[in-house]
Amino acid sequence: MSKVACRDCHRVTRDEVCPACGSDNLSDDWSGYVVIIDPKESEIAEKMEVELAGSYALKVR
Image (cartoon, rainbow, N blue to C red; front, side, top):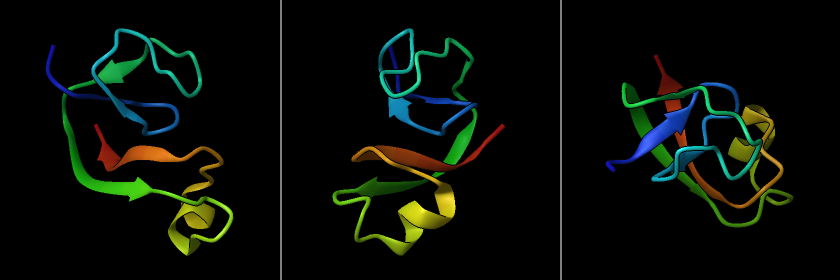
C-alpha cells in the first residue's frame, strides 16, 4: 500500500486505519510533507493542532 493521509488529522501512514486518531477516512490525494519531532516545541505543530510526533500532510483532498 502506498502512503495515504488521514482526512481528519492529516497523519501520513501506510496503514488502513490512521494510527493517530483511528479514522478510516484516508486519501491518496495529498500534498506537502512535514515531520513533527517534538510537538510541544513546534510552531507548525501548534498551527496544525498536532499533539503526536510523526509525519503529516499539509493538504489532504
